Image 1 (cartoon, rainbow, N blue to C red):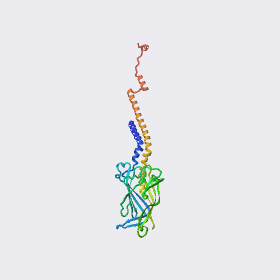
Image 2: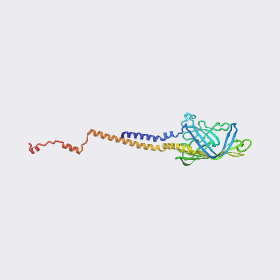
Image 3: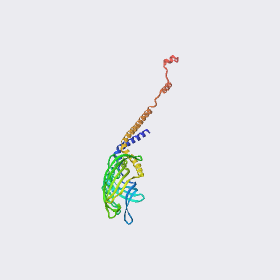
Image 4: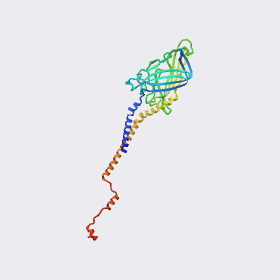
Length: 361
């Protein structure tokens, strides 16, 4: 039994030793890679928002509703498309598609957007390898898309996030700006790093819009699209996944006829989405952190200890087995009682002088 336990201890020790040495270069590298076929759904809600709703009736006539104090719900679906990545790049590059549908609760649909992004599977940074596109649909061509070149991070932060600034994509600006680390925060038992991306309000586009949007009459008028935002992202640091996201948006149309809010207010992940993200990615993040930070030293330490225990068990068994074999070969060793018994049974022959003295001769 001791020999079996010793062999098991040696085997486990060797396994832990190898696991510890291979944790970072092999195990962590394999785990710290986003999947090609990822799929997720998240829901964001904004209350007391001001939005401009553009819609068309059955006769394809355009209408413009300026809504205030409404609740906006946005549902975002992300779908990985492995087939868009060339075979020689699948080890390092992922291609995901995201669609966002926004609705004014109790009123009707607001917008629907589609975007495709290729990015590095480890760092999360856009690579633009596989035909990135973004929707530019309007009332006449809602499914229209155009090619786009992305910058910085889009879906997630890199694995092993640090307390520093990261370049993060903003679709309205059409470029990436800094998302700065500001603090740590616990979300449903999961520690997150909080990053903030501040975008001062500025002109991001110009277009010609109906004067009716500004309660005017006559032909279309030129207008500036003004945009500002404070985007806050709560990130699980081991995986780089966004557990919670929030935006304080200030997007308006400005013309000689006045200013109209296109989208204004605070919108962010609802509680159910945050809780589900925290539970899922918090657990996976802990496992990933163990492989990266703990297993490299704990594996070799336990491996050496188990190896020593196994060796002691095996050596100890050998010594006891040798002693028993030797004893069986030589026979039992008599004790004091045995010597006395032998002495009692011995026959001692008397000498002739002793017999003569006793009168027997």
